[in-house]
Amino acid sequence: MDIYIPRLIYVLGCYLIGSVPFGLITAKAMGAGDIRKMGSGNIGATNVLRSAGKFGGAITLLLDALKGFIPLVVAKSWWGIGNWTLLMGFLAIVGHNYPIYLKFKGGKGVATSFGVLIALWPDIGLIILGLWIASVIIWRYSSLAALISFAVLPIIIIILGEGSLHYFIFSIIVSVMIFYRHKDNIKRLLKGEEKKIGKKGTTMLIILIFILFMGNSAAFAGNLDYAPALPEDIYKLMDARRATIL
Image (cartoon, rainbow, N blue to C red):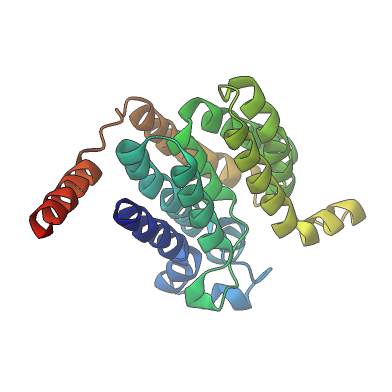
């Protein structure tokens, strides 16, 4: 049981980090007020873009992605990619969608999911990100871009996911969660009432910043070796302590 304690603590930490409402914090820091009372009321990057401007939208997009990327790239370096690491990624996304700090009323998890995917599988993450970017450029609907890219995610996992059933199940769960969080957007898209995101130049600028940042993040994650030094040291100390007691 002792060997699972660090992982359980880390799982909780991923949820708490994912719960940090960077959209709300960024909008307030820029003097735009409470983002929950503006636009769609969502704390994600799209609503920040519409309500606080392109700089606030770009910052929120990057910070929300980092909530998924940093905890998962650290977990991957310690434990590799297994069920525990997938659970940590899932909880980071859940934290963004249902943050404890905001009475479980959060965003839709797209940027945080990108961060998680790029940390776990840089090639797959960049493919999904590329689909999202292409869809945004073509149609300029952030919601439609998310639906298209995450609908394709399970297929990409089947092709590039090393035949892992666990990876496939994870991709299905994440995709279903993305679709569920976009249920109102789906209704508006079907009615032709969904709003496009900003002017084309603004959209392209934010996308360019995001591409550069996440591309570098993917390169870092791709070159990262699995070296679980810290957990192994913890386990050795625990074993030594038990041996002393016995």
